[in-house]
Every structure is written in C-alpha cells, then in structure tokens.
Image (tube, rainbow, N blue to C red; front, top):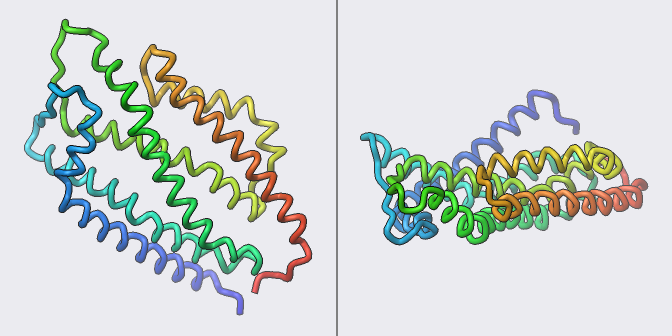
Length: 243
C-alpha cells in the first residue's frame, strides 16, 4: 500500500530519532575517552608546542567538539542504515540487495577521508603553516581554534570521499548522469581547486596538491561509478515496479 505524505513524515521522524540517538550515545562514549582523543589530535603538532585556552568555556566546548565528531564517525553505520531504510521503499527489489554494501562503503569512505586528512595532509600542512615566521615568533595555540580547524579539515575530507558512493545513489534514482558530469567537468575542477585553496591557505604548492589532486581523482572515479550505475539501470529496466 502506498504511503501518504503524513506517513513519509512519520517515517522520517523515526529515522531521524534513531540517527540522533545513535549519535548522542556514541558521542557520550567518546566523551569518556576525550583525553585519549585529544592526545591523538595533538600528535601532528611539533613536540614542544602546547595547546592553551583563553576563556572559561573553551575547554568544555573543545571537549564537546571532539566527542561529537568521534561520535559521528562511530555512529555513521547506524545513520547510513537509517538513510537507506528511508529511501529503500522507493527502490526496485533488485536495488535493495545493495543495502549492506551501501552502508559499509559509505561509512568506510567517510572514515578513509578522515584518515587521509589526518595521516597524509596534516603532517605536511601543519609544519609549513606554523613555520612561516621561523624562530621570529613563538606560537600560542588556542585549543578551541586548533580543534575546530582540524575537525573541519577532517570532516571535509570525509565528505569528499563520499562522492563516489553518493554519485552511485543519485544515478540509481535518476538524479545524476555521467554526460552531465562530463559536460561540467571543467567547472567542477575549477570549483574543486578553489575549495582546495580555501582548505589549505598556504603558498606551498605541495600542500595545495594534497587537497586538489584527491578532489579531481574522486570526481573522475565518481564519473566511472555513475556510468556503471547507468549500465545496471538500463539492464534492469524490465524489473517490476517497487513493491
């Protein structure tokens, strides 16, 4: 039986409640180990550099940011599964078989993006940014701004690595086509390069390339994924309507 608009809103509310609950629980667990997480986030800094706070609330806010981000990573499989459960009724029976791969690869892609930012981009970017003035000035880092900058960078890379998975999903539901991506490839690359320049505001071309090259590669991979998805869609046109 077809769902009414009210039924869809009720279903969306349920999925949002489960997703937010999973995020809150995972964030609570991450808050317990916030000191270990903070040590992990401080690792890319030079050994002699310390983090400082300049307001009463800054330590609490930084702790909440760390816990919320770690909770998002931990709860991502649950959140993605709820997204899939919401859109699954509109998919063909053949397409519903991809539930587990979609959930696994979406969570894995986000985690890989975070890991790439931490283990590849940060070790090269931070020393250059902190060493522009050499020994002429001593750094006094705010823990709030440092944590916010790191988590933003890691979050951006996590979203970037979702491009192929999201491209597959959008292609399967007919909202994205490879010819469109090819037509606007140049504009997409220009926008990606501008985004890379914003993420790594440094004159060093190597650090710029660490962001720009993955963006371009992920865009090309997404085109390939969308093409594969379209071929599967053409082969599956004889499938019955969603039940």
